[in-house]
Structures are given as structure tokens and as C-alpha cells.
Length: 113
Length: 360
Image (tube, rainbow over all chains, first blue to last red; front, side, top):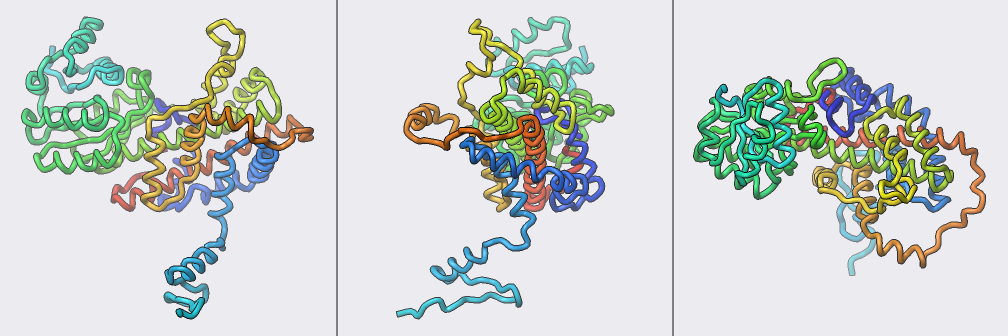
């Protein structure tokens, strides 16, 4: 409860964070707590509309766009990092893992001259 | 007067206010400042208080009840190291040094380990709430040896702010740099909260074309619901104020759009990068202040680079105000989600065993 009074970020909603960790000390991420998950369900349409309008209007909203971006990344089973890893393997032989079996692999993208 | 139960070094406003706060809870407090005239003034300004001035380090240390409890409130970095070095010859095993400065947590980790070799306990304590908080009740984030914390806990619990149910806004955070780390992330989160409120204001003002008075009323209304917070309330208040130099304009219209910073937001981002944990909200908030500081470049660029044509955005203003409110709360949740994820990764990395529920 140390941020509840006296400090600059004091806010009612901090109780929701305390509740979330009291319920589950090992919670990976606050969004996964039922209260916060419910807010993301209800409010994500609004933040998408607001961020879109801001971009259309030419008004920078780096905080709002970072928030929805983080949300969309965090809830993604698949991200395009496969392309990044392929590129790394292509130019630097950094190897990659596979989706279907254990181990480290390198693809022969081209024949060494 | 009793032998002082605690001493405060550094009589700048934070140290002075913290000393007065401690004294007001029934303690006798020893005071020391590098420049003696400052100490003299504090005592002269508060003649009725149980304050014991010292004009040398030796005198100061010897005046204290043992084991000694000493709070250092001097500039972070080299001045803090210098003060510790001066104190060390006069301290004895079991004494407790508390650094209440705005210290980078890695310095606290180092000092804790160094002093531990001489048997001196070292607590790095984040102090939040500014000058007013220091005097009336700050939020405190102490990290260091648990046994040392227990020696100072009764005092810290008395001087700290209290939650609605009376719980003191202080708890043992963890070993060595844990307290200063949590304070750093607290400040980073503060950057995020401030940035998100400023973006909401910008949309209301420059996209929905609402007046400053209308936005003040909206923020005041938001502050009654999920967004109830100190920062929301002071922003609503700020928007009601007029220029104090008589132009008749809202004060926000004459305040230059250049935001400064003292580095704690940057430290949070740097640590997140080091630990490999996403921290885009704080980082974007730091960048937003950096780009704001490029005022003259922005002014020049604004005459060259064109944005979109803002004909008719065709929006239902009332509905959109509610959307911005929801976007603000959603984004605030993402910011705290990142903040606590960073705390979790740091806690594992540094083996601090942070209790996340106690922090909020």
C-alpha cells in the first residue's frame, strides 16, 4: 500500500493491483487478472478508435499507441519474429528453432563460393 | 532534551522537511549540514522543536543514540559517496545509514556491499511526495538489510503517509538496491501517467476543439470514477487557473511546451533495456519530453512539413470524450502492466523477492 498516499501516482485503482497480486502472487502480467482483462475487453475498441483518429488528424499519441501495440503484441500467439530470425540466419548464420521439433537449425540459404 | 534518536544530514528543503516531520512525531533529531549556517537557520526558525544542531561530523555522530540511525539527504552521486566517506571513521558496527536521496539503484547496491564489510547497515530509501510529502507524510521505499530496517521501522511508519485504512505507506521492499529500484519504476510510471493525461488533453483541445474550461470540467468528472488519482485532480485544477501576469489567458496557454526531466524515467527505460523487458510506455514518455525540448527545431519544421488536411473529421464529440476516457484507462493499465512486469523481472534478476501487492 506504499503508493496509496503521499506519492505522485496515488490513485484509487492501485487497490485493483493489490487485489490482483493478493489473489495470485505469481501473476505473470496484470492484464491476465480478471478485473484488468475485463477492462481490456470493454475498452480496447475505444483506444483503437482514439489512436486511429489521432493518426488521421496528425496528432501524436505515443502513449496510447504504445499501449495498444503492447496489448496486441502480448496477446499474440504468433509474431513475425520468424522473419527476423530467418534474416539473421540468412546473413549471419545465427540459426533458428523450429515450430514442430526441438533443436537448433541452420538453413543453407546460398552456396558459399 | 533526550539524546537524538535519529540524525539528518543535509538541510536543503527535503532534508529539513523530513527532519521536521520526524521531530513532529515525538523524536529528538540531530541535524548536520556541510554549510553550518543552514543548520543554524533551521534551528533558529524552529526554536520550540527538539532539534540538536552539530557543526562537525564527529560531534553529530557522537550526539546520537546507538545503534545510530542517520538519514543522508544530500545530492545523489559523488556528494553522497563523499558524505559516507566522512562518516565512516566515526561509525560503529550495527549503525544504520539511510540514503533518502534520488540515487541510482546500482550505486545503492554498491554502497550496501561496501559498508557491509565494515558492519555498517545501509538502506537506500526512495522518498516520494516532494517537499510537502517530506514534511507531512511521504511514501517511503526502503531497501537494505532487513534487521536494519526493523531498527528504523517504527520511525518510518510514524513519518510516512497513511492509506485510507491507516496502513503506513512504507514497507520493507527488499535487499540492497530494491528500494531505490522500486522508486525509480514508480517515477517511470509517473512519467507514463503524465504523458497519457497530456495526450488526452491534446485530443480534447486540438482534435475535438474543446475549450480549456470544458476540458477542466471533463477531467474533474473523470476524477470521480476509475481514473480517480492525484495527477488527474491536479491537472483538472491546473486547467481552471488563469495567467498570474494578467493576460487573462488560461495559465496553460502561456506555459512553454517544453518538459524537463531529472533522469529517473530514463533510468527505468535503461534498466528495462538491460533486463530485456518491454517498457515502451515509459520510454515513449521520456522521448515525448525529449522531442518537446527541441522547441526551436519544431517551430522551424512546422513551417516546412505539412500534416493532413483537417476538414471535417465528422465525430460525435460527446461519444468521443468517453472514448478518450476509456483509452486513457486502458493505456494506464498497460503502463502499470509493463511497470510490474519490469519489477518482476528485476526482482528475479537481483534476487529481491519483491512483494508486488504491497507496492501498489
